[in-house]
Amino acid sequence: MGHALIVEDDADSAEMMAALIASEGFTAATANSLRDARRQLALQEPDIVLLDLMLPDGSGMELFNDPQTLANSEVVLITGHASLETSIQALRLGAADYLIKPINIKQLQGILSRVMRPSKLRAELADMKAEFERTGRFGLLWGRSTSMQRVYEQIGRVSGTAITVLITGESGTGKEVVAQTIHELSRRRKKLFLAVNCGAISPQLIESEIFGHEKGAFTGADRMHQGFFERAHGGTLFLDEITEMPLELQVKLLRVLETGTFMRVGSTTPIEADVRIIAATNRVPEQAVAQGKLREDLLYRLNVFPINLPPLRDRIEDIPLLAEHFLHDICKREGENKRFAPQALQKMQSHRWPGNVRELRNVVQRAYVMEEGPVIGDEWLVFDAPSAQEQKGPYITVRVGTPLADVERSLILATLQHFNSHKEKTAAALGVSLKTLYNRLKEYSQEGSSGGSESS
Image 1 (cartoon, rainbow, N blue to C red):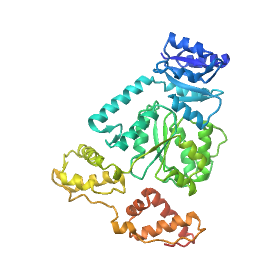
Image 2: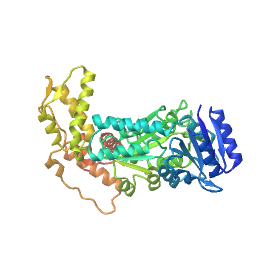
Image 3: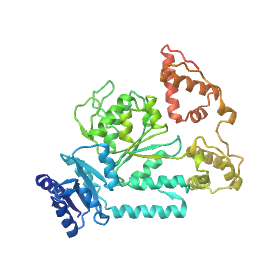
Image 4: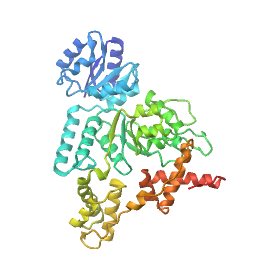
């Protein structure tokens, strides 16, 4: 049985929360001031502290001044309104989450269901750091480079909180793996981790897929459908390629982040969203805003804790470790052991890897299949990267005032033509995922079939 301490100057609110917490199987104590809170903390160390920052004899923040006071208690801030400042404050203080007055019972129940002492999280993080020292693996990630160690530090800092994270980096750098590692280290680990590629879902279906729909909401909706928000309840929702989400849907996502509720398509009944959001993009977020791909207000909401992943070419020292990891997995799966010759590893380290870690994995898999013997040389290390001459390419001329959508279309089609319709090279040169490229080409094809004309 866990123990909770409620630090709240409103006696009625404190007693209400105490009764609810008791019904969830906890013992509960209340404190109406800093003085009372310190006395209760000395009497019994709580598993969770619900802390109002506005108290009669000072700020609840003063309890954080002594690191030992709350060292082994999960802290949830109680605030009068949700804001970016509240999120940042909670992160800075080391709080796991925050509740908005008036207290939402379902949100409180969700927090209570995930109570975990910080000491347990710290012990797990220490084990992962020790594993990294031994093997170069941190959670689901591999690499010993300085840039990756910084990423590990950021993951360790943010995973135990409810803070929204925005992961940036080129396609193939491992943004989803970072999101999964954050989830596995979080208090939500027992619930679902769902990944959604916003660039891979048709614009006509994406709202229904994310928020769900009611029966009869539109033609073909012959039953109620639960969207990703409902299916990920209590867990983590990873929104990849967030800049590919239609702007009108970005408005609705912003509303979810602000209110904590959403509605299925065809419904007027709000549903509580007990989901942690992690978003990602392969674009520079500020440039995406300038290009009209991402709402500025949504960026502010998502970018509370940014993590940037380095491209593989900037951490060449990690290539042998990653290649050996991928090869080990393939050998285990296929039941035949093979190893790399030194010249194969050297050749991999001299490549620029425009497709990043994803490209490296594909190259290793192809080499394993093609090499008949136990040692993989450099013969079967075939790279899809464009040559130096290909990378230079021709230029296209754009008239001032041309709509951004037309500029994008012209650039994509010209790049595709330059690489002789080789889609992987085209996507790598443009810095977008292959799925995004396919979606754009499908749109252009549909426009052409409906009477439009394509220009290169």
